[in-house]
Length: 241
Ligand SMILES: Nc1nc2cc(Br)ccc2s1
Image 1 (cartoon, rainbow, N blue to C red):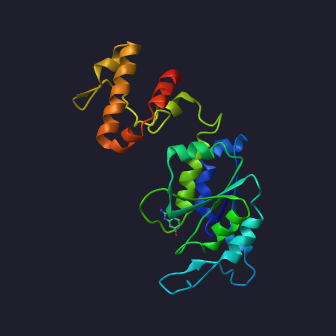
Image 2: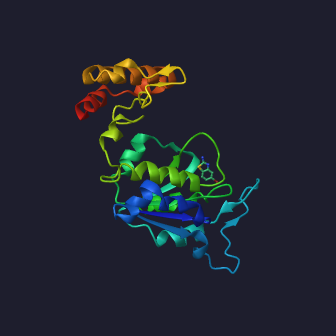
Image 3: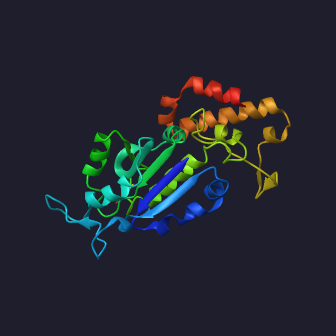
């Protein structure tokens, strides 16, 4: 997979050189390129924004500058992602779908956002365009969202995570449940004991305890996920164990 990210703050994407994503890049499992939007300007001030039509506070990012940047990156196999608080919610299911794509291009907006004609223009040209929200809060730009998108997608690529089984059991994994609580040594700490069942060595009991915990936690903390629970996925999760 190739991922291109366009931003006026390319240095914000430096964390993508670290850890899991960094290793995936080094090993050739993932090809990430970060571009400075200001390289697509033509004026000596490298202007990327202007005042909003219709008035209002703040500035809007110019469509012509974005057009130059994105024309140089997008192809028929590309999927353009535009992080925005007014987009569709990014979930693990979204990450799974994006992990099957060949080429992602992430346009990081700043100020009041990117001129709406950018998304419209590329949709009209047959490019897949998704405006995605990583949550109901407003950031100062799309760069943090880009870090979230890239990490959530990259870790699903074959070979990136050491033990693919962990992708099944984690929160929002294959079964769509929250993960069960985890424990390790020492068995007793601060007057608190790890659950006896986990030290029993009885794998069947451990499996049942973990599944019950996942269901209970999900029902308590995220009842909305219970409604969306796909029993078939739950069965698949069991099969994956
Ligand atoms: N939650 C989010 N806030 C923002 C703000 C800007 Br400006 C651009 C993208 C995003 S995604």
